[in-house]
Amino acid sequence: MGVFMTKHIKITTLVGAGLLGATMLATPALATQGYFPHAFGIQSKGVAGSDVAFAQSAMTIAMNPAGLSDVKDQLNVGISLFSPNRKYSSSHTVTPSQTSKKTLFAIPNFGYSRKLTDKATFGFAVYAAGGMNTTYQNDIFSPGAGKTGVDLMQVGLSPALSYKLTDMVSVGVAPIFSISRFKATGLQAFTGFSSSPSQVTNRGYDWAYGFGGRVGFQVKPSDMFSFGAYYQSRIYMTKFKKYAGLFAEQGDFDIPASAGVGVAFKPRPGLTLTGAYKRVWYSKVKSIGTPGSNLGAPCPAGLGSDCGAGFGWKDVNIASVGVTYDVNDRTTVRAGYSYNNNPISSSEVTFNILAPAVVKHHITGGLSYKLSDNMTLDLAGMFAPTGKVSGLHQFVGPGSFVTNKMWQAEASGGLTWNF
Image (cartoon, rainbow, N blue to C red; front, side):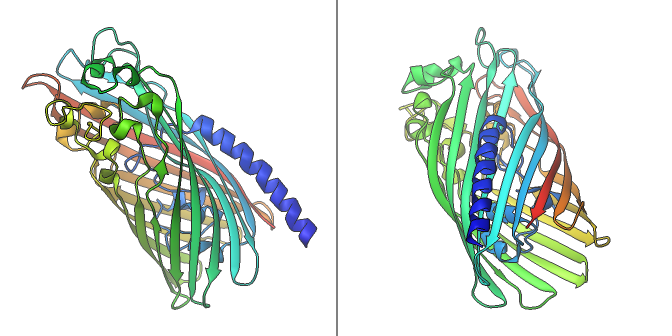
């Protein structure tokens, strides 16, 4: 048993390390519900992330770690092809209408779970925790600036432990180690508003590292009902020193706290209905939530200072529902829908040309098919119809408007190996 487990841990470490490297290279554009993904893991993607109380794979670590108690010994490996289509239109020549380039991104994920005892389960996950990307070929904010855009990537590495307190109640804890990468180009127009003009733009990639945690619980009062909840703490990151003149608090860009509750209902064998509510506190992170109007007089210390302007994002509330149906012993189908409010108000559209996270609806579907007793093929798809927000141009006189638009599509595939 010890040799068998040691072998699996070695395999898991190697696969996890490979997935971590791939994730760090391939995940700059996740701006869906704010800049968080709509779900973690392919099975969860199929039900639009509504499975807070219904763990379907080891990737539950990235949402509700208490769900590990219901997961078999398994390895999940998957990849999503994500296509965000971002554009803006402007009535002023300072910001001519453009469509962002780079519209296809590969996003891997990895999950592992292993029963330690009848009550305790260990797991580990590597996943894209968040990100946003825009790549505009021409000047946006000032003539001669050249290519303009931002590239943010956040990866989570999370071991986890769940424990069954009773037959009905499970709890889970998952420390989170996070790695972020960021680059900004073409923002020369903002150097005059910064406390550190040389640390605003065109500095190449910079890296930040941080730590936080996630806790969860799950209650099953009967075979028909289950309830779950989780809380993820704010992840405190080291600062992007190369961009100390751009982000508030001298380059600080923490990952905001989030929480969620969910319910699962099984009206008959093989059919599960799920629902969840989640909230992300973007406004509590100054570099994300501070209004863009702080650029100038309201904050004389300028960009990069403690009161420096941010993206002006509001907190995001997310409601999702899903259905999972076992067609037969080999095939399971899924469908889901989620809605979230727009984090960007009409007064914040100009700076958010760089981060047009304006989609509100996600329509999803999925399929799992057992290739053998131990191997399952997992598939999922997502479509987010066009969202938009319009408002006055912040840096030009009255009468000039900006409209940000985005729509998204995603196709995911992977394998689950039960052992």
